[in-house]
Amino acid sequence: MTISSSLASRLGSGTGPARWSPYSRPSSDPAPRGGSTGTTSRPPLRVAPATARLLGPARKEDPAAATPGSRCRDARKQEPNMEMKSPNPKPTAEREEEPIVQKSRDGGGGFVFLCDLPGHTEAISGISLPAGSDKLYSGSTDGSVRIWDCNSGKVAGLSPLSALLPSGSLHAIQCVDIIKMGGKIGCMITHGTWVFFGITKSVEAWNTQTGMKFSLHGPSGLVCSMTIKDERLFAGTGDGRIMVWKFPDEKSDFGPVEILSGHERPVISLGVSATMLYSGSLDKTIKVWDLKTLKCVQTLCEHKAPVTSVLCWDEKLLSCSLDKTVKIWAASKSGDLQVIYTHAEEHGLRTLFGMHRVGKTPFLFCSLHNSNCIRLFDLPSFDEMGKLFSKKEVRTIELAAGGLLFTGDGAGELKVWRWAPQEEQPATPAPVK
Image (tube, rainbow, N blue to C red; front, side, top):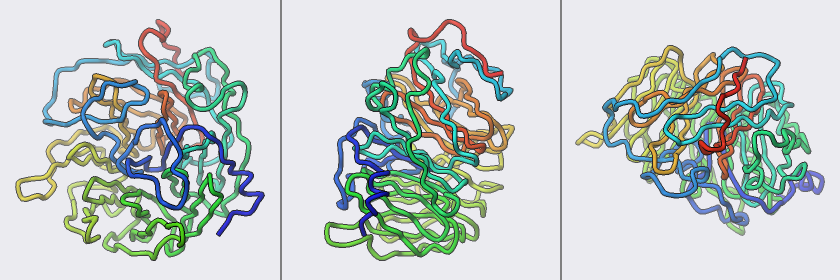
């Protein structure tokens, strides 16, 4: 089915770098056969859209484009090796023009606040930069998809945009179109040139280069989470099921759906490793599914409240919950996952995300529930390294090449940050009042 000419012109084709999202991000799998693969400078931020953000050992490459990852060789507490100055957490409608900088004292750099992208009126549920496009897509529970032109102003593409100095233009990304989806968007991810939007009773799939569009029907409620592995799209739904579609080849549409049943409440987070699919649910459990057989092989019941995010890290699984804990799971001798470390917080947790710094241990981002704060931790020590702030709790976090970080919160605030080396940062951070 081809997109109408008007919608195709809205989507555009572009020739820029790529990216991916919603409780999710881009995978290291090859792009599906249904469209052009494109060329991207962005790292695979997850083994599949909603998880493996912290795979592999430290890599000596540009820190902004490094693959999030490192090995958790043990979960024992290490000596603190870094700190990051944090701004005052009190939010306000008025914000100083000077950029917000959060820097560490180990010479590793920190995040510089660039700008807000205003327009959404409700929670942001997904942020996406598809391969081969110079457009940024953001989806919201206000029912709209906003398309942002990253070539606006005098900035050509995302890589040059990432070179913006803190004093540069705060209007380098402009909203060029708004598409109404007819209902709230529950989640959103990208795979190659495809963008997927989870809405009530369907997943909308757009190919931003070929102009193809599919509506994948089957869910009976809102699609709350998605991930992709082995040319299969997995979608967690509000009725507790997980729907599975195969990617199309050159002669067919998306293949027949399979249904994974077992959860009693909505599946709000999905993640994949090389062989397993992990699903976190409001029923307080995590289910482990064999990707070959699509059978549930284990149910993890150690959380005492809804499981809000799951994240694959090397050979381990991280999960967070409204029970105010982050848990690290590893396989026992029998092969079953067991908790090897629990990190406690004062608030429930909403979203986990990881980023690797060259030659150093990774950051773990922990977005706090009913709070405007994201806490940054060193892994595997869980030493606190700093905080980022928004208006309300942050629902989605995305990383692009060149060190650009996007955060979307429950108030519809979409913020752009840039990773900056230590020498680029001003001596004194500007606080958020």
